[in-house]
Image (cartoon, rainbow, N blue to C red; front, side, top):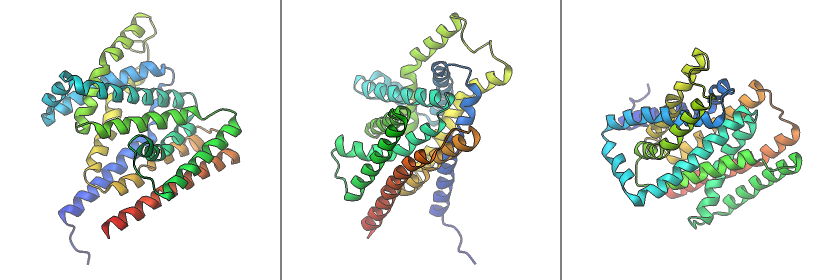
Length: 302
């Protein structure tokens, strides 16, 4: 007979389920964005900011953190870093939505496979952290994979590289922010609200805006952008506080793996033997990175 679960065990289980839910939703989100492929990516991101802010302000008010948000918006020292975070996040969203709707789902998945390795490189060259030998080998293996892609396509996989760089930069800025995840995201969204609202007004005045010009289901999808954005972020935040960082790092590969599967089997993008070889070098890099993290964690416990 199994022993009864402890409160800590229940918390960890709930956290793991929440984190899985977040990464599964992020992995399936191309199915949402491709339904809106007739709307320009810039307009979609503007809608995402506006409707996300509605949800974020409601959640922030419920948690009693509105005072923290207003204080951060009035403090000049915090505005600069949060504005940079917001711009990096906007760039990431814009490139991702454009890439998905332009038929590059596989390349967008590559970008998020590269994120952990970009984080390792940022730790070394920005934060001056010491890298273990295995981490250097992992970065070299990923570089070989990207180099093979350049040789095959005759161009860098700029969508993947831009996604990895902007998301890695965003993670670095968030790491330095004193605010918790929800207030920080609310501040970032508030800072870019004038630009997002202005873009939507411009699209409407130019007669190109989606509102009032698309069918009912498309309107419903467009107005759901806030929920689509915030639900996985909240699940991620809940899970991140309740499970080990190593477990969270392993689960993060769910999202790009699902995106890759969608690109190959749903959207029928070409996945040639040469492209598979490039991915193999990157997957080998991720396997080395993960194994090294697990080993380092066990040594630290010992």
